[in-house]
Image 1 (cartoon, rainbow, N blue to C red):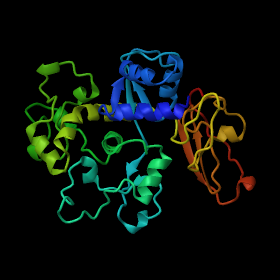
Image 2: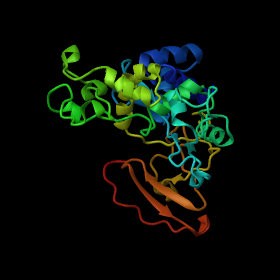
Image 3: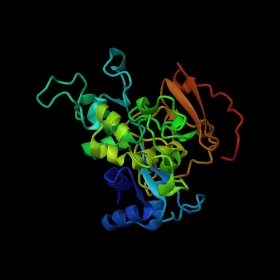
Image 4: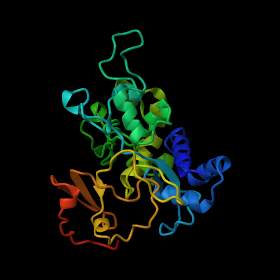
Length: 328
């Protein structure tokens, strides 16, 4: 049995259910389709950078179980290219060249009208390579767009901080109805509002916000799903990311080399002092050495220092590591 297939299947499940599921729901559907132990499934969900495990009452130091009420959220490092369609993004390797209104689901161009100047082609040469490198080719269009909406911070407006302060229908927001940010209860988005239906802040997308979102090209279906999408965005933002996307491997086979040359390397691994060498990572567990650039990553302390190298690998002089804070 391949962990590759399990990761891809679980990703599709999450993206087809507004980006997240409770562990009990995901566990039931995955175990109905694959012969996998609870331990292996929990290990994949915790160690794979494609997933974030949040909430619940489980012991986060244990890999043997996940609380049934934990939420599993789909995540990715893929974004829309900020420089597209400018010439300087021609060599972009990680950003999708897509129309953002196409991602929203309601681009006003095309459909018998004037063609859109931005690409609507997921299968174009550039976009195909990005999706292949990040193992997202299995997702259909709606699943991919759901994944992008909750991971790319450039796509959706922020929750208005000032609306959540002060009193009155607009809180302390001086822009009131003309505010470009979303007027919704921040604690509702975070899942910890104590007031419930008695809360003086909105727990839904109000009519004014709905009109503004529709003007941005966001479909009514996506607007209806926004409260849960914003909840996912909040949890992903506050969830630590300790792994990188790359090749998916089997536990029995050990880590394998990614099809995409990685630009990340652990300094302690080079020095043969890394305490994480034997730890299984579903995506690209061991660091790969780029010929021209190395990004030192200290996983335990979450400190990253980027250093540019021009010399070849065999002439590489390893600098001293910075002081670490915390336990590896």
